[in-house]
Each structure stands twice: as C-alpha cells, then as structure tokens.
Image 1: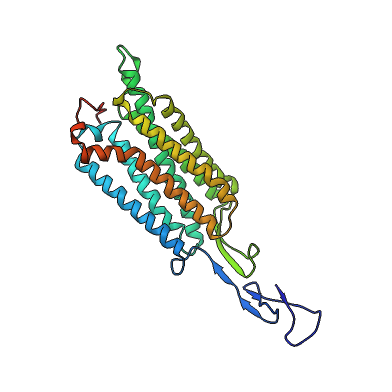
Image 2: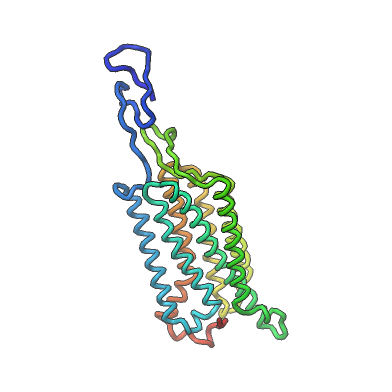
Amino acid sequence: MYLLPPGVDSEVCYKCPDEEWPDKKQVTCIPRTYEFLSYENDNLVFVLSSAAALCSFITLVIFQCFICYWETPIVKSNNRTVSFILLTSIFLSFLCVFLFLGRPVTITCILRQVLFGIFFSIAVASVLAKTITVCIAFKAIKPGSVWRKWVGEKIPNYVVIICSSVQVLICVIWLSVSPPYQEYDMDSYSGKIIIQCNEGSVVGFYSVLGYMGFLAAVSFVLAFMVRTLPDSFNEAKYITFSMLVFCSVWIAMIPAYLSTRGKYMVAVEVFAILASSFGLLGCIFFPKVYILMLKPGLNSRHLVLSIKS
C-alpha cells in the first residue's frame, strides 16, 4: 500500500489511495483490478450461465410433458399438484443462479440469498410432502386403516405451505435485523478489489441454510424408511436417491465454500445450486418422463397407484 517518491532515496513512504496499488518498483500507484464473476471476460460465468439456461429449458420441457399427459396415472400419482409446485420451484432455483453472476449490488445481494432460500425450501418441502403421501398411502391400503381419511391433497398441501412459510419468516427476520449488502474486499488479495456480498447477519444466513438442511434430512429419513415398499410405491426410491444427492452436494459444498475467496466462493455456491436442483429434477422426474415418452404401456392404472387429485 506504500511507495517511495520517484527518484528519491528516502525512508519516507506515501500511501496509495484505496483504489490503487504500488507497482513492482514501488515508485508509482497503479489502479487495482476489480474481481467478480463478470459476464464480459470470464469463461466461468459463460459455463455457469449456460448450464443454468440449459437446465431451465429441460425443466420447461418436462413441465410441458406433464401438462400434455395431465390425466394419465403417472402424472396423477403422488399428488400432481405438489409435482407441479416442485417443478416450478426447481425452475425458479435454476433462474436464481443469474442473480449470483455479474457485478453484485445491494439489491442482488438481498434477492439472491433470500430467493434461493425460499425456492429451495419450497422444493424440499414438496419432496417431503411427496414422501408423506407415500407413507400415508401405504398405511391406508390396509383394511380398516384409520389413515384412509388422511389420503388426498390436504396434508401434502399443508406441509408445503407450512414448511415454506417458516423459511419465509426466517428470511423476513434476517432482512429486518441485518440484510445482505455489497462490500469491497481490499485485503484478501494484493492488487485486487473483490466486489462481493456481505451476508449481513451470519446467524440469519446459516439459519436459512440450516432450516433447508433440516427439511432435506427429514425427507431423506422418511423416504429411506419406505424405500422398500412394493413397486407401485417405487417413487419412494427415487425420492431417497434425490435427497441423497441433494444432501451430498451441500455437505461437500460447505468445506469448499469456506476455503475459497472472492468469485470462486460464489462459483462454488452456484455449482451447488445447479447440481442439487438437477439432482432433484433427474431423480424424481426423469423416470416418469421415460415412461411417458418411451414406455407408454407402463402408464396404466394396473401398474401405477393413482392418488387422484
């Protein structure tokens, strides 16, 4: 940060402005470079944005496929309303990736973490609702079961609404106490100014992640318990695997996130969002699309337990 006056053999040093840095000879100040995930000259942004756009397109294709086969048993099984909520939340999760790219400003710092937390919570809550639906449906097939009155859309819908509302409340408290904001990190790297988002309240940020992880853990445990149900209930297997992928991605992300700085820290979070969202999309919906498009003979009431909406 300090330099000698040019042509003067002196021990007196002069401090460069915060936006500048001494050159190698320490005789003049040169501008620092700004570092963030830039759309203009960063190949990493091109890769991440292309992946997000492609995944969003695939989600829309699956959405359209489900609409075309709206009245078929495969689509109607395990609450099609929750399925569409899950698809929508996954699609929005892919789109929120673009809030992490480009030069961060205060409004994008606020939106990206809050929307990411809410969209993911809706997605995981939808998976949890599907898992609960499977559990209730299996118990309800027994003669005289008291679980029959719980079969239907009400319980899954309440699960999605309540679980999502808790995350919204956490985000509101976070924004009220100490919201995220843009900051300039001038100390991490010599000659660079990192434009990044400060999460404001660290407790608020990790509360959002922790609650999302709690929902994922509960969904995984329930799905794992019912994974061995008969074939007509085999969506439990897909839910189990989707939650395994989801949890594995975020557990692996934590040490990588904490050990990086600057734009690479953001890139790690974006990769985790893309990988976990695609894991949910692939594990839960790809098997259904495969049957709808390539094995229509399996799309019958005799082979699929249809929980009608």
